[in-house]
Image (cartoon, rainbow, N blue to C red; front, side, top):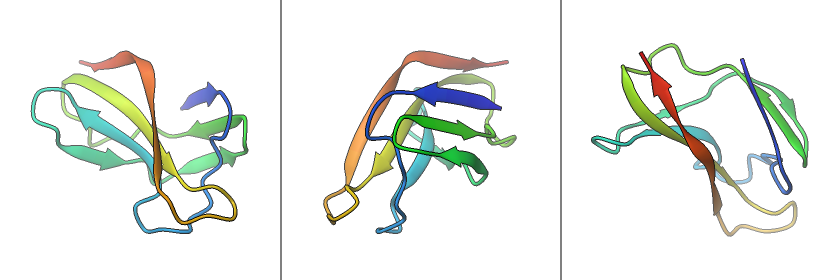
Length: 83
């Protein structure tokens, strides 16, 4: 499980491209977190996908505003390392 805090994190599922994604730093492949337990404006709690291969990954939250259709992307530091 992973919990992150910030602002404007809530995923509204307005667009199919919304969600929490892990992007591999070596080849830009992506894995979407399918299990989000807490989905609030300031907190996201989720299960990291078990399919992540060993390597370095960055986490991105892609969402829209509650009343909008423009996809925004927040990139979180630090880089995650899977062994």
